Length: 440
Image (cartoon, rainbow, N blue to C red; front, side, top):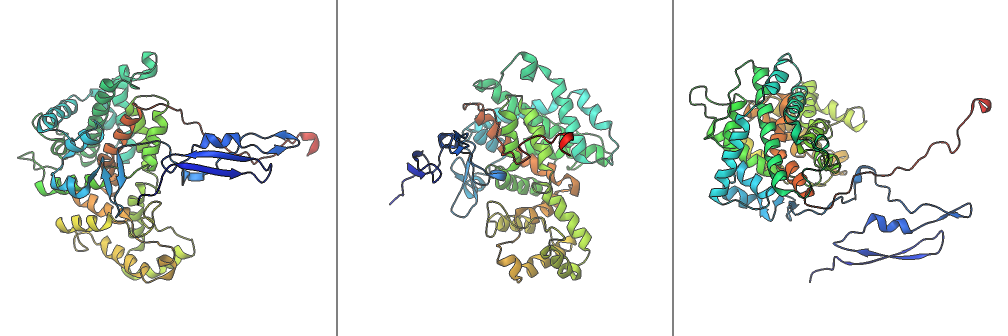
C-alpha cells in the first residue's frame, strides 16, 4: 500500500498559541506558507517565521523531471537506469537529447544532433584561441578555461540577453535549445584548446563526420596522430563514466547554474559560474585535493599517522563521506570496475596503493565506521580521469565534460518553468544599535 505524499501539516506556535494549517504536496511544504506565522516583540508583530537552513541541507529549490535515484542510490535519467543506458550503448548525443531536449533520440535525431555539435565545434572564434595562447603553458587549467569561455561569450554578444534589451531564452524553446548546444560545444572546444596548449601540441580541430566524444578526445590531443582516432576502449569507458556522472541531483555546481540562470543571462555565463564553483575542494576539486593528499602522505606506511591527524581534525580527508550517500557510495563499485577495464592499478598509478591502505585502515577504525565515513566516488574517480591522460589539475574540468549534461539539462528545464530570482534572506546577529564614538 502506497503511503500518501499529500496532506496537511498542523502547526501550533507556543509563543502566541495560534494554530496554522500548511498544505503538504509531494512530501514538501512551501516555505512562504510559514510567513504567516508571526510572533510578537515589544507588543508588535514580528516578521514572518523564517526557515533557517545553512547549506540548504533540507530545502528543495525546484521541481524536476531530469533525474532521481533508484533503490541502490544510482542515478535514474528520466526513468532510464544506468544499466538500461549501458545496454543501449548510449553516447553523448543520446544523453544530451534525453536530458536537455527531453526525449531519447531516434537514430535520425541523434545524427542531426551529432552533426550540429560537430559544426559548432568546427567554428572556433580566433579570439578564443588567442585567449588560451596568451597564458604560459604551465598556467592552471581552470584559469585558461574561464578565460576561453569568457572569450567565447564575447564573440557572441548577440546571445547576451541584457545587450539585446531583455529576456531571450525563457519560454523560448527553440533559442534555448540552440544556446544549450552552442554552450556545450564551446566547453568541449575550450577544454581541447587548453589541454593542447598545456601539452605544447597543435590544436586538432573537430571533424564534421566524428561523434562528440571522438572530437573531444581528438581536440584534447588524446588520439592517434596518424588515424586521428582515440583509443576505442577509452571512448567506451569515458562514455559509461559519463552516464554515471551526468547528473547527481542538486549538486553545488548545478545549484550555481540555476542561481545564475534565475537572473536570465545566457547559459554560457551560467556555465562559467558553475565551472568556477566546481573547482572548490568540497566539490569536484575534492578529486584533485585527494590526489595531492596522497602525494603528501608519500608511502602507505605513513597512512596511520595521517589518519590520526584527520581524527584530531588537523588534516582533512577529501573524498570521504557524502551529503547524499550516507553509507557506501553506490557508484564506487562501477568506478572500480572501469578502472580494472583500463588496467589501472598501483603498478600503473602508485598513489593507488596509498588510497587502498586508507580504505583498509578506515574500515577497521571506529572513528570512521561510527560516523558512516567511507570512500565516495571522488576518492577513486580521479584515478580514472588520470588514466585517460588528464593531469591532476585538469580532473575537475574533465569531470565537467561529463556533468555539463546535467548542468545544461537543469538550465534548459528552468527556462520552461516559472522564474523566481534567487534572493534568500539572512538572520542578522550583529549589534542592534550603532556604537557611536561617544560611547566608546
